[in-house]
Image (cartoon, rainbow, N blue to C red):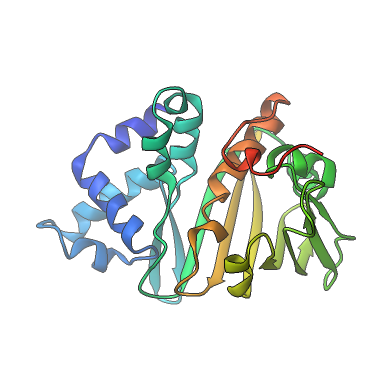
Amino acid sequence: MDVVFRALADPTRRALLDALYEHDGQTLVALTAPHAMTRIAVAKHLRLLEEAGLVVSRRRGREKLHYLNAVPIRLIHDRWVSKFAEPWAAGLVGLKHELEQPMEKVFEIYIRTTPEQLWEAITDPTIRAKYHFGAGVQSDWTPGSHYTLEHPGADGPLAEGENLIVEPPRRLVQTMNARWSEEAERQGTSRVTWEIEPVGDSCQLTVTHDQLSDDAPSELYGGWPMILSGLKTWLETGQTLTTPGSLMYPAP
């Protein structure tokens, strides 16, 4: 966590995070424009933010796009801040309801586990319920198969979709149709990609939620930091993590 605090200590880096909070998926040129700095200087700040896990970059053709990764901030919240200032901390991980263009959200986390154990935690309904707000996922996990996200306290599936690509234990690509509210259901189909990359005795997990409409409400993607924080906690400690999302549905 020290590297996260050091990254957040600089006002320029905080301003870059604010810019990505307002408009995710920006290029270096766009992020440099508001600052009286060279692109090289801004690139150095972005590199430090990436090293801290606060920013994730992705290549799209010739462009390199930068995305805010709220997971480290969520982890700080869960470890320290939630005890003292829950309402204030919620604002750090809440994302805007209205953005200027179709949205793509990228979340990244490192977990001390194996690719096989991580894949099992994503696809096993009992384990999934430990960290995904009590909801388990049901599927036969073959390409083209159907899946549902179900909670025993809900009247029907919370979400469902198709497994587009199933490559255990490294990559899972799914469509997603949210069913937990009328507003979420009106948004139609989006896409979620899980990518697992082994790094020493740990795994880098990247979740990309894209094909979101330009007016998609934050309830569609704002829960990922809590879900991934809970996944990390479960795999590393065997304990469940209480989050606002985990309290949404009463126990059966």
